[in-house]
Amino acid sequence: MIIMADFHFIRPWWLLATVGLIITLYLLKKHNVNQSGWQKLIPKHLANVLIEGKQSAKGLSLTIPFLIGLLAIVALAGPTWKKLPQPVYQLARGSVLIMDMSYSMYATDISPNRLTRARYKAIDLLEKLNEGEIGLIAYAGDAFTISPLTEDINNIELLLPSLSPDLMPALGSNPYAALALASDMLKNAGHVEGDVYWFTDGIDQEDVQDLTNWVRENPYRLNIMGIGTTAGAPIKLPNGQLLKDDSGAIVVPKLSENLLSTVAAQGKGQYARMVNSNQDIDTIVLPPIKHDAESNNESSQTGDQWQEFGPYLVLLMLPLVLLYFRRGKLLTLVPILFLMTPSKPVYADFWQNLWQTKDQQGQALYNAKDYEKAANTFEDPMWQGSAHYQAGNYQAALDAFSKGHDADALFNQGNALAKLQQFDEALAAYDKALELNPELQDAKENKALVEQLKQQQEQQQNQDNQQNKDQNQQEENNEQQSDQNQQQEQEKNQQQSEDQQEQNKEQQQQAAQDQQKEQEQEQNPEQENQAQEKPEQQPEQQQEQQAKAAKAQQEQEMEQKHQQLLNKVTDDPYLLLRNKMQLEYQKRRQNRTSVGAQKKW
Image (cartoon, rainbow, N blue to C red; front, top):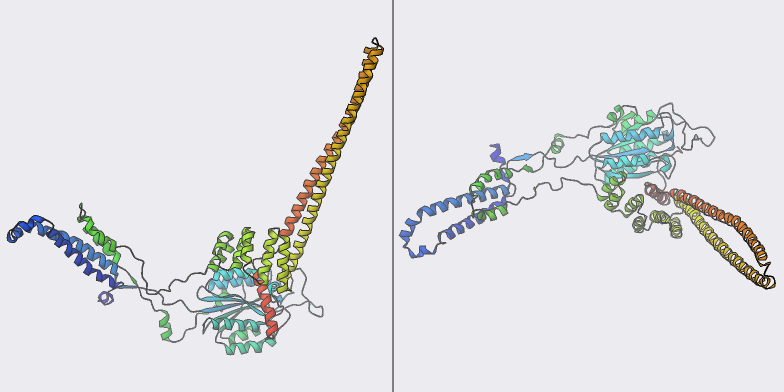
């Protein structure tokens, strides 16, 4: 009875094809009856007797195609009577994680410091919160959205290691600003209820009133994780120095558990001090808020996704197809087989699958260091440029960064141009970036590095030109000296031949002796010249070899310095986040005053 009550067709319009099937088979039967011309010549009563057995056989042969076609139509209509359990909607739970990034998080009362332990504990919390949307906020002197509400927990886990007090543009501690930003985030996303998870190492008495007002004005639960110890410890900065107050005393921040537990209780949440186990996480992670029975039943409803039994009818068709498998018979099944083309499964809930955006997919590839695929996946031109930059495709990175016109885009253009060794264009890009944001410290540093690179490049070019000039001058001097030696030797040989002729005419007897003496005299100067030329040639060759070796070594040293300076060019993947926070903070200072109690650490 239950099966008959729930039995229906998912695609009932396919049943209309039964009319077409009946018409097709009727026409085939009529064609078979009239296909022989001699039947018209025989009287009708005799023709019926003669073809009765044959017609009955043909009528039986058309029954099989009819059954095959009927089963195909019913299968395509999608018979079903079993409903699959399918949630109507995903659990609408909104959560916001707030991270305290004040300087007190550098305290070393827990090893290695409060900041490092808080990062790991935050990752444990995200793994515990495996459903709903989660956002990330960091605060110091002011609060900033690090990640909006998202179901991609992995993206938030990748951002947590980059958080530090040095990243924040405003020093101090303003927890009220963070809570106000969290409530706005949940309200804008349509979450009437939600949880706020606050990781902090303490508050002052001046903060209690503002936090109490926030709890009264907002319906969200406030769960607090205390970081540190009540004894406290000095704040060890990244440069190794200990933080001191205005009077020169070393600052020792202590965990204010009493104040934090009071605020958490007022916010209908839980407070827990951070421990090595997951007991603290289990304490602050509360189950979703339950109301009446109606809302509980609503969360367990199932959608209209039915199990389709049409494919099982295809198994019944196979024996019939085998019975009809004779020459010339399968052509009748062509229209039926065409109707059996598999269709895509139809589901009542069209929005059941939620996918990541292109930028989220590209972010995952970027973090996996698959920069080529990430560049092709990103839709944001700034992220495309960063991926191309990391992949070494600096020209493609420049093209992507050129689509932006803010200070960050111009700064990234300068970095890409510097890698392409287009130093003049890089300096121009840095200048434009500093015009839009004069406090962009990274642009100032990179500009100074590029100026050094440009200066070294010019010096190298000048040295190369001077060396080439000296080498050409030396070659010209060697050629002139060689020409002079050859000319002197020719003149000397000519003079000696004339003296020999005169001596032969005057005294033939002494010709042989005189000729021998002259030959000895000729050989002595030649030997002396050769002896003088050899030591002259050897120092010249040595000098050339030494000059070439010195030049090669100098070029290698310049290339190493050049590469070292290029490596100093900042290409931090989180630079965009830091610069945006700085710009947002500057706008806030111009438009409004800070709300909530503040301290320096």
